[in-house]
Length: 254
Image (cartoon, rainbow, N blue to C red; front, side, top):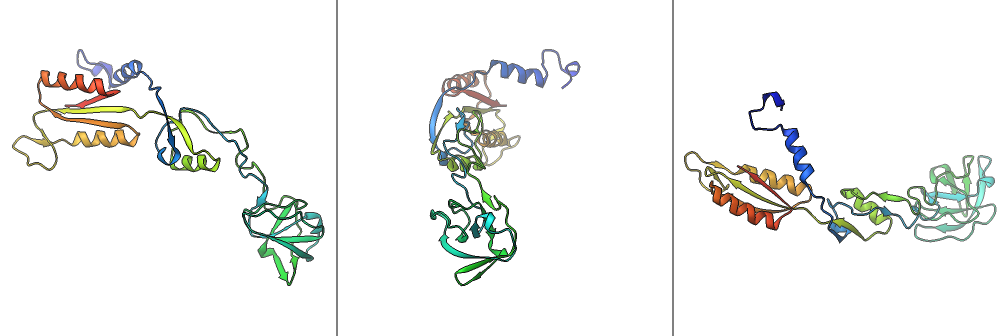
């Protein structure tokens, strides 16, 4: 709104917003919630990882784990000395051998690369490596995604579904969040009627109540609705006083 176009005694929308924000008191009350209940909540602390993610060097794919110095020519044939599924830790790799390995399994000592199974040919207890292998190939290093002691989420973050998964990935089960803002609403006007009732002549349905409720719920507020209030000063002051004593913020539409 242009101030020059405003009616006498009125202020612009921008000025009104500024006054509201200047008068607002930050909500500082904190509570602890489980991460499955944390969607939409606002963190009251930085979250630091106590672990590396991944926690160990591991295979990025199904294949064969080797020491690259044993695979500097195509067609090298190596004995398969062990099998390492995900969730198990293999023995140190014997020189001149390969180990069958699966995605996510720890890379054993003495090994430094994984060859994808599509580039290998198993022949009995041996495997033919049909490529020249480079150290570090197809290995996800410990801490590659998240390093120990790194801040993974900042205080003030409104938690999304992916943030909940991130918290779980670093072993966090509970977080400190700010208490939900409690917002009271009420609606004035003798012409408004709740949906589901018949409209009399000159009446309209109270759509603003549901728009505001949806907006407030979408940003994580607890809503206390005082409904439709008779269109008198006395009734408005009475419900305003009660709402103000029970909520952090009062919103009204008339």
